[in-house]
Length: 150
Image 1: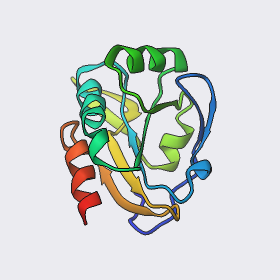
Image 2 (image 1 turned 90 degrees about the vertical axis):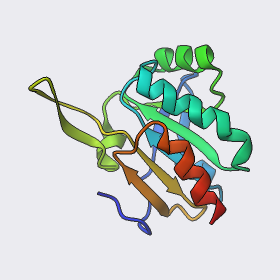
Image 3 (image 1 turned 120 degrees about the horizontal axis):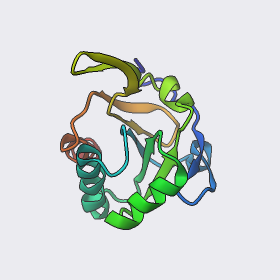
C-alpha cells in the first residue's frame, strides 16, 4: 500500500475525450485521484456524483477518476451525469497496479482481479497527503472536504 508522505506514482492515460492526461502537468495543484471499478454502476455513480456535487466546495482541487473502462464509455458516463471532471481509462490496469488498488476480489465464491475502490489526495509537490483504500462511495466526498479543511 502507498503511504502518506510518499511520492504519488505518475499517471499518463487517455481521458474521456481520448486526450493524453499527465499528473505531472498538474504540479502545484492539489489533486484527488479516485479509482472505481466500473462506470455507470450504482456504487461508482454514487461516488462520482457525490464528488460532482461538492466540486464548488473544494476550491482549485482537481478531481480525477480512474477506471478500466474505455474512453467512449467514460464519455457517456460523464455526459449522462454531468460530472464535469477528468475520467481516465486505465484499460491495462497499469496505473491501478502502481497505486496498489488492483486486487484479488471474491463474489459468490468466485475469485477474480479487480479495482479496490480507493482515493488519494495528492498535494502540489506530488506527495500523497491521504491514501484511502477500500473507501465507500459515500465517504469519498466527505473525506475530501474534511481533509481540505485541515
